[in-house]
Image (cartoon, one colour):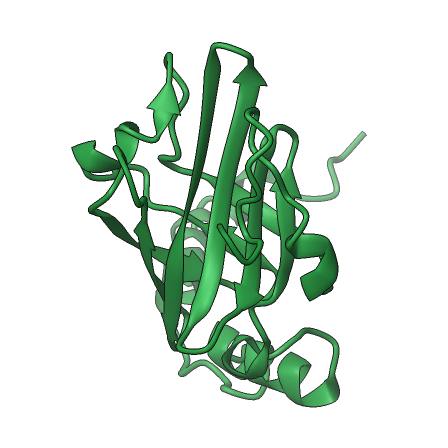
Length: 181
């Protein structure tokens, strides 16, 4: 029986085939911008279509939470009042109030009135999410007991209600965003 392709007929084809494969792998055409939009363009289109909220025009007011972590934000005469509460148990928690101002997607947070006074940090605002930096000043730890910390706090909005946000309390029963917060 005769093979369909003789071994002698293919010997010269292998180097040519290998060269063709190498050349095909080296060809890099210019990317088509319409086929691969940048993330900013896609995000801008989603904001324009109303699929996601525009962080630049979203009001901060509300309650934000994830598991044991809570943040309340309510408007005040000059800025916003903010309350931060981290509750692992009776001996491991943080509860502190302060003020927050906004500059684009950056929140300038100043917390504390007593022992925790002087805690200032910049958090990220992502429309319905607030993210604290992974490292916070030592003064911020004074508002916490035990090993609890506000570092890397990452919470998502649960409510846009100022009335609901004003009711957030710490473990001692203090209102964190109320008039006296």
